[in-house]
Length: 216
Length: 275
Image 1 (tube, rainbow over the protein chains, first blue to last red):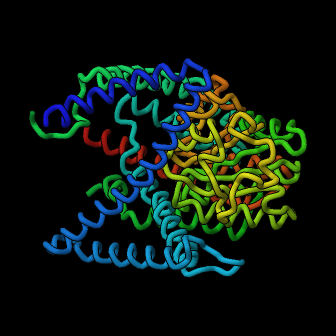
Image 2 (image 1 turned 30 degrees about the horizontal axis):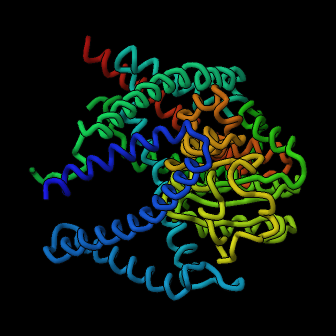
């Protein structure tokens, strides 16, 4: 059982990891065919992952409703929303409109999901303004630099700022292109090196947490 | 309690009201300040202009309705430009919750420009797998999308004639609100399959994509509502983005003023405490 639970997955990970790392550098048709098949599998697994995610969400909220935990009413709303959407989605074969006529599924999407998501995102502007007023203070030299840079970029990104201070557009562009890009690039290089190191650890079986928590 | 202290603890509903008014009033009474075109947006426009007629243009609408205010105008402006240039438009999405919206916007612009589904454009819809879809499209487009959004088999659709994989795409643009988005299209798409790639994104994401822009990994970037407004100005069809710029100007100004006021009160309170 240990072989099936531990050694076999480690072996599969190592072989496929090395195979597909090498595949990138081999443009042979057989190698390309292998990649085509593997990505096809990945797409199929992706579809199942979606089902798994929805099932897990149902389980989690069912437990919340059963135990009547704080905010269980919201879980009930989630249940109702999901079940109704799934039912009308299946009824409409997943189509928002059929022959130009909007289906009930399309109605839920256009008149419930779109405005609700838009509203959630729009509310952010109000909270950002409130948070900026409360916390954006030049408490230290570093905070002052950040504050000045933010004000310049905010001015340079809108026509009013460029109209009032014509130089703000160019300075904002320089901040984004030079200071921001170089710092972001340094972070990216660091993250990429970390990802490469982690990949090697997974391929060679040093990092095994993805196998789950059961002990040998 | 000192005045400065009271002002620092001001009811947040007053701030909400200020921001609300700064958004609403410019929308009702637009000023129409001139919009300066940035080099990154011009690059996208110039590349689109340089494409010969009937070139394949891939638009990946990688966002959901939450990012609609910023990215929807970008998509509309790009589609208008592509249809006006008589490019073959292949649209798709990597975000399942954006599928309906993407279909609606493509149909709307195509109808406005008198374009025909299947002949001038196709909407491939969404396929599971996230970034794996990009690799799969690079290998074989028909494996990744055996049928279009309407359920019609992709093999044999006139607009896809001569298109086998991403290698046959003349220009691809990902309008991304997160992951998978522009970065994924570069890492899993352009790097291996060598097509030209441009990006569009929300204002929050844009600074993070500048390294890709500076290194030429993407040839242009349309950032946020401002980028959309610039593109609308470039194609000469001003729409929602240009209309929204006055509101954005006013809210930015309001936030700058609020931050300045907060700092004045903060320092006056600090100097009072010192002495």
